[in-house]
Image (tube, rainbow, N blue to C red; front, top):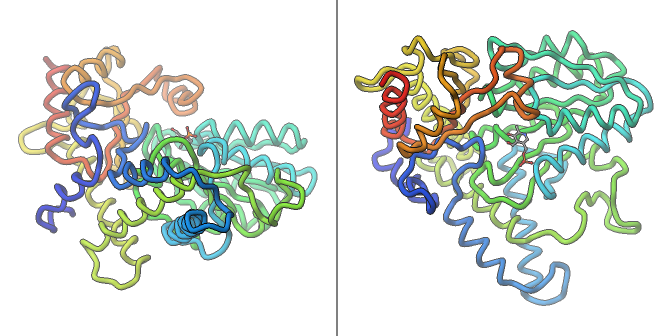
Length: 418
Ligand SMILES: Cc1ncc(COP(=O)(O)O)c(C=O)c1O
């Protein structure tokens, strides 16, 4: 899809730091985006600028007013990016910490008794929070088993377990191990059909970099993002919470502003980089849409990203030029199947009879960065049912190129067949 705009992929790549080169290793192809995406150069500049400012927010001086305005703008930008018409955006320590905070408050402050529901597809961040706090609040925890064949989870699987007394539900938007998305709207509808007042919290950490966020349509109460996985940087997390989740009792200062979920002074520079991220998506969307409406441009960006990422994963699976794809190699097992419409830029696979860590090291020596997922506390939920001890995770993003996929396939073939 990017091919329709001449020079676009170069313009895109030019906006990111270390796009083809690691300061430690030298030239490399970056296929470790699910571990942390590339950082926008604008984010680096903004972070540097704000890091030098000594002033605090909430004072009556020009700099303090500027800081407060930057936070207000970043929140508004994120509301547009998320397409959230109510509720609020706030920042915390990390995506994990915010999931714990949203889930623990929903579990404790929802009506006594009842149940909490979540799925085996989730990352341990939301699963651990839901299981720990449902035990503390004496609510039963119900586990929705995901579908091994698709690497996702269906609304009817939630529908089979949800009860009128289900107080809190957790969902993952996209699995960081299988790379497959979940239909959040369908799952939330299935939950609300039985438990209309359920607090629904979504882990959007792996999904956000692929754009296409539409909270208004989901019918949920909480959504967590880790900014370093969506072109900003480490050191903080972002959450959106609905008005009714905002209103629940939560940790806060006595007499402090109502509805404030933030604890202590936040980093204005962190907030300001969110505006850079949204501006980037906006710019990208503007390459595909003439709309005067920012939200429409953001949607155009998401559509283009999806199209380009699909062309990358198709090339990875089915080959490009005269190179065979992973699906054409009989010794390669692909998690979640080869033609899965839920795939978001990620291919997880295993080579039969080969040590996964050795394959990844051999890729690294050839300048291709990927990552191993082991059947440990992060990924055993996905790998154990498949009888796999580990897998290779190749995670791509819209700034990657078919040329990089070719480099991967050439290296992979050399390692596996050579
Ligand atoms: C889906 C998902 N949820 C949660 C996390 C944890 O995110 P963080 O370490 O940024 O808190 C990750 C990180 O890999 C993830 O991919």
